[in-house]
Each structure stands twice: as C-alpha cells, then as structure tokens.
Image (cartoon, rainbow, N blue to C red; front, side):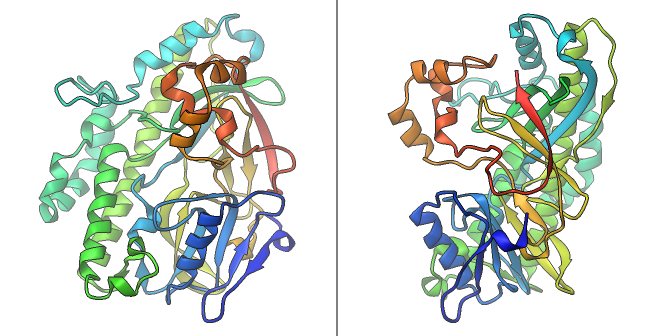
Length: 399
C-alpha cells in the first residue's frame, strides 16, 4: 500500500486515523467506531484503516490497531485467527473435468461444513469420526489446550477437537481457482471455529467485568481492555496465541483433505507449490514498528511486510489476489483482507432473491440457494484493478 494514498482523520486529543479508502465508500457507523477506538489512551502512533473497512463489534473490521500496555479482546474479535491458505498446483485448466459439480461434491464430502442449528441433531459442521490427520494435528495442540482449561474449565465444553479441519459458516469457503496462466489453485478461508469463538467471548466478558467501575467512561463497552501485567492480560495472550495456532492447523488439515479429493477426481498426477503463506487476518501479535515493540491487532487486515506473500479474496463469484507486501510503515505493514461488505447479512437477505444469486454466480460452480443469499456478490465492495491496494498480484478466477 502506498504512503501517499491515505486520508488523515483526527480529533483533538485522540490518535490520528490514516485511511486507505480513496474512492471506496465508508459507512458512517464504521467511521464512528474508528473515532471511538482512536480515543483509547494506549493507541500507538495512529490507527491504519484498510479499503475493505466496515462495521464490526466494538472495533471496525478492516482496521489495524497498534497498542502499548493494553489489549482490547473485542478488537481481535471472536473469529480468532481467521485467515486464508492458498496452494498452486501443477494442473492447468485443461486437466479439470468439463463439469465441475462432481469435484464440488467430492470436496464437500471430505470437509465438514455448515452448522446444524437444532440441538437434538448431530452437528453436520463437526466431525463424527475424525480422520487420523485430525488426531495428528490435535496432538500438537492438546498440551497447551489443557493448560488453558486448567485455568478456565468452561473451555473444555466447547467444540475444539471435533471442529479441527472443518470449515464453518458465514463467508468461510473452499475454492478451486485459475490464475492468469490458467494454472489450478486451491484456496480456503476459515479460522478457529467453536473454540476460538468461546475464547473470544470469554475474555471480552472478563474485560468488561474487570472494568465494571469504569466501563461507562468508555466510548463503547466493547472497547473494554486488559492492562499489561494483569492476570487476564497474560491469560488472554496465552489463549489467543493458542487459538491462532488452532486456526492455522485447521486450514492445513482442510487443505490436505481437499487436495486428496482433487486427486481422486483428476486422473492426472500433480504436485503442489505453496505460493502464499497460511495467513491470519483476525489476530494480534507483537511486532516492531517505528523502533518500538508494540501489539498489533489486525481486525480484518493482512500482514504485508516487504516481500511477504498474502491473500486478498474476492466475494463469492469474484476474482481474488495473491499479493506481495511492500512493507509500508504507515500502514504498519498491512493490507486489506478482502472486498469488505457493503451491507449486513440481514439486509442482503431482504434485498436479494435466489434468482439474483443464480444470475450473479452463473459463471461459477457453487451453491445457489436461500441459505447463501447473504454472501451474494452484490453484498460486497468490488475488489478490482482500481481497488486502492498497490502490490504485486496474481489474479485468481474462481471456477
């Protein structure tokens, strides 16, 4: 992202806000959230706002929040470690079958997805009998999870082991794509699933309880925070790091399963080359910026250190980008994490029909039913050549 492209917004006594949103609409409520976050006394230097900015819980999705001496759990959110993984294969478009419905069915059969809302039924989005690969990855995660549950026993009753290697709902997806050279890629988007949600909600609640006497002084109760050195601060750092690792393992398991399904449908043997890192876009970590060590919370943003590869997915039915960062210090070496919503899921369901969904995804082999109307391409900003992100890209077109 180029330094000269940001717009500066500031209020007396608050941290400045640098917004890479030239030519991109920004919702008024999202702007209000940004101004509220900028009031927090521990913001380091400034907030950085990505072009896919839109309303979130407490803090705005599409923002980079640098802090010193404190952390805001709701800024990280409840989909901890949500992110992307993409793999380039040696296959080309001509190696794929003429009709892709069989490939989609094969992928759907090896990765649990969705959710069963009624408690009396088994959750279709969780494993009933996990495969061996899940056991192998869980063995890496289990010891640290026990350390967490020893402190917070309620986390033991969450979906953790049975959600490892599963997709989820909402805008989480698995996609087979073609790049500009007609090579086949596999790309997917998911996070820390049920256990990450439970960790996020637990510590958001604890932060609000810890600040109960002072919470009315906050611009938003969801900006409740932990001070560095406090018990819950250290516990949250431990928990969020584990959830981020769970999310990374989750994507690795799914990618392995999807590639195996692809090999069953495509007769030609193929190899893979991981061109993009397994990258988070909802997370927090310590980094050094402007010569100081700070906590960087990326709530809907991707790390774009100089030369670092990342993924910016488009909306359902739209192209995506494999990107290489420029290391722009002003954005805390960050870039956008997707197209960004233009309306809520509820609004999309009210405005569009199944017929609209069928028309807008006519070029794509995908679901076209009432349950995915909230993901219709028109509910998102257009991620295209004029999007204010200036980084080297490989364009991926979904099949």
